[in-house]
Image (cartoon, rainbow, N blue to C red; front, top):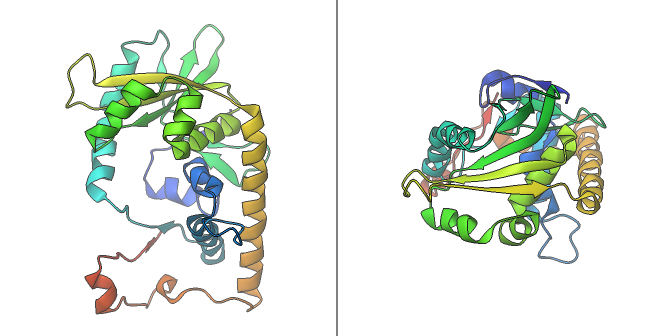
Length: 254
């Protein structure tokens, strides 16, 4: 596994993700467009453009989460979820930091952890933790998600994220963990082993490499003047009072 131990959400971590297609965005890339005449869904096009702008600016573009409370909840409870997982698995659960794809270093992933087999001296499974702010989601995962087919049906974006992480890390399975500390001791932790699906990975790989090509084309157009950078990515740009009024937050350049 080609990885760098680095703390998530630090300046260095953001900088190392600059311009790269990362597993957290794979669900967005795999989304089907509502308009049959479009090749990419709107959110996928925006994701690719943002990656192109990062390369052009040499700055990581951080868009604040739509729901800061939900994001903070997940971050605050991730360590507790991993501690709970350690109580039921027989292997050390370790941080692996940022993992780079051997096929292309412009593709990366940050699993929440990995299981380390001390006998083999290697990682054998990844871990992806979700701590839903809305407890209904945890209940859905706890009662309806037991394998990769269930996850793909119930939350496809998580499915594609985890398949991408296994591709990047070169592993065959990953633990999906849903954790809600508000529940009883018996119900607060739910796990499901998600297996690698090579047929789906073939589709995902084609999509990701296509997105990289599109990113590079946009960067070329920016350098050649065929395309302009959106004004809100310029340092001296000020949001209008109308934009502030609808709750939009300016992206941060890192």
